[in-house]
Image 1 (tube, helix red, strand yellow):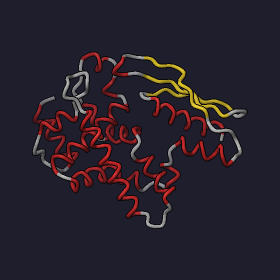
Image 2: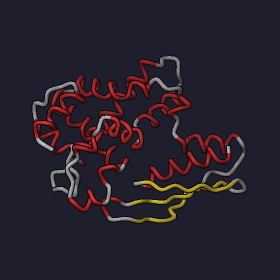
Image 3: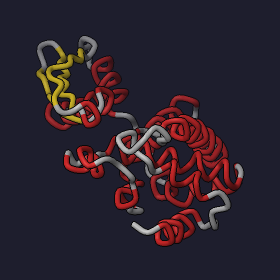
Length: 222
């Protein structure tokens, strides 16, 4: 990856010419590549994303109650959605990482992609301000914002509501297995509702595995 090609890509996906290129280099640097990785920018970008999406939902759906807005928000800022957006715009090609991480497939990890997407949002915010960060986010999230509330509802929330409405016990989540190298761990989680059944899923974080397990449970038993 040449520096020129990388900065051209940044300009294309953000619609802004980088003023501080080092911000974007840091935003796409995995921990396996060095100390100046994306984690601090990810922390910032996560908060910017949440604020932008919350504000946009508040303005766009003036008649919806807080509960529905929260369902939309939780779905839209989830790691899986961030990872899907990152994959769509080709983030994986530009992540700097160590050889072992590359060999282990970290470049294609939805968790890593989602983290880098948030760090890029943080970089845009620092480089160009909130208006640019908002434009960047809405450009790549708009089609998802337009989805029906049920389409973005978080699977764990949906499963919880289903259990309550059907007078079933609260879903129980258990960590079944943890495998893989430290920088690319995989977690297998099960979710069970007494007298109904169980579903399992594996993902790059416990939260993502729980989400996928809940989704599988809903598909299988409801």
